[in-house]
Amino acid sequence: MGDRGGEGGAYANIGVAYSPLEIGDRGGEGGAYGNLGGAYWSLGDYRKSMHSLGDYQKSIEYHEKHVKIAIEIGERGGEEKAYGNLGIAYRSLGDYRKSTQYHEKHLKIAIEIGDRGGEGTACGNLRDAYPSMGDHQRAIEYHEKQLKTEIEMGDRTGEGIAYRDIGT
Image 1 (cartoon, one colour):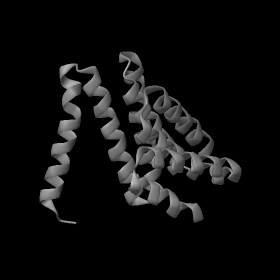
Image 2 (cartoon, rainbow, N blue to C red; image 1 turned 45 degrees about the vertical axis):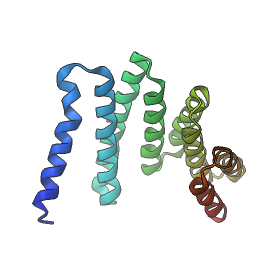
Image 3 (cartoon, rainbow, N blue to C red; image 1 turned 180 degrees about the horizontal axis):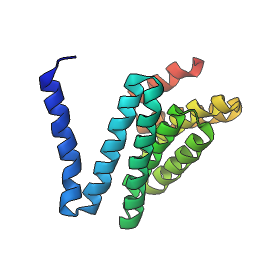
Image 4 (cartoon, rainbow, N blue to C red; image 1 turned 45 degrees about the horizontal axis):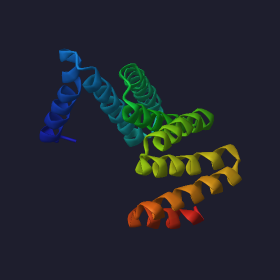
């Protein structure tokens, strides 16, 4: 597109993502892999073409590295986030069964560590995935759980989104 400034910023962000890999910071390394996975997912989502399949696959590779490191160092929040991102990446590939498995793991950890926002996000992602597998009842159950979580947290924006999504 000719946006040299944007291109330079993108390269700088890639450098920032790789810097923990150079200094042996395992937590930072896991986060960097998560960021790289997110970048590849965004690229695939932007392209929406045959090329995006490779981007989603690369995203999955990086998120799997993030999970491995998070487990290794006992970082439950990182593990939770990586599972959620894997669920999103597999949904983008149309693998709804794997997507729901990762979102279920995301939800389980969110509940264990008391991350109510993560709990609501996982429920919303499960709500979106189950209809693609023909399980509309489970989608409704997760929608209700998401709405309840948003109300309990006092997240009016999340609550509004949950109400909006009732009809979708």
